[in-house]
Length: 168
Image 1 (cartoon, rainbow, N blue to C red):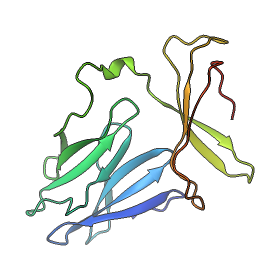
Image 2 (image 1 turned 135 degrees about the horizontal axis):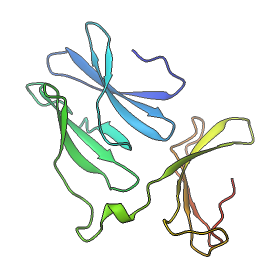
Image 3 (image 1 turned 60 degrees about the vertical axis):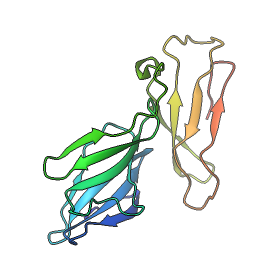
Image 4 (image 1 turned 90 degrees about the horizontal axis):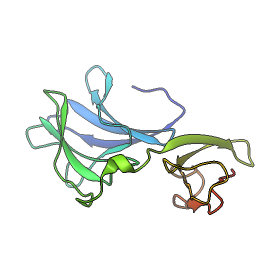
């Protein structure tokens, strides 16, 4: 299926057992894969960049196995439910959780940044920089660690800087 250095999480089986899904947590992003059980060929389900995951409860596959209920969020948009049509290979957004007056285009996209921790491991973080930030300005960027370290149970942490500088 997938030979990777990233964490993978099992998701769900289709009602007929022909497919199963899993999530690959790779470098601050989560992608959903569909695997043909007979051939073990995995296909990444195409969604915008962000975190994509099956809902699983009670089941992410529709009873006829033609659709997959998926959660998706990004650095600009909150979590929403989507339906993925397996035959057409097309996703359609079902819910719209963002405040209607909030235009996601005015929110800066996150940037992936990497740094080495005290134990030599590379850590991924998400950095949001305001569009109009200038060096040495007083506008605050936002920094968040992407996910959790394997041996840590601490949740994602967020920092902001009133100096406009972020040091890792």
